[in-house]
Length: 124
Image 1: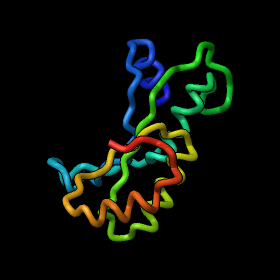
Image 2: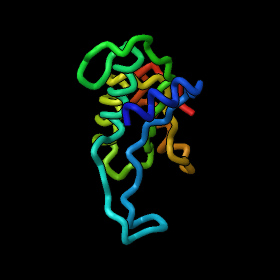
Image 3: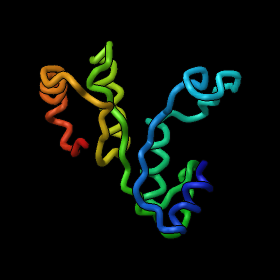
Image 4: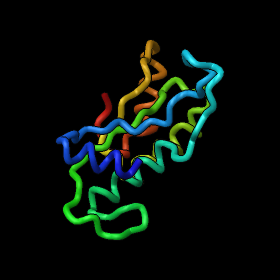
C-alpha cells in the first residue's frame, strides 16, 4: 500500500479518503475473503508519516508527500461512543477533514456535532 500511495503522490493525487470499508459479504462478491491488513486509523497514520517524509519503518523517503487526509465517521452509529472514540483516534493520527455517512435525522446530527465540537476539523 505504501508504494501505491507514493505512486499516487507522484501522479499528483493529493486528496485521500481513508476508510476501512465493508466486509465483502455485504458487497457484490460475497464469496471473496476479507483482508484487513490495515484499517482507516492505520492508513491515516501511514499517510501522516508519508507527509512527514517517513516510510512505515520511520526511514526517510526523500521529499515528503502532500496528502490532504480525510476520514469517514457515522453520526448514526448504534454505538456512538465507540464511533467517537475511533474518530478521535483518526484525528489524532492526522485526519484533516471528515465525511459523514448520510444523516436524515437532524436531532441525531446535532447530538453528534455537539460531542465532536472540540475536534476542530471540517465535516462534509
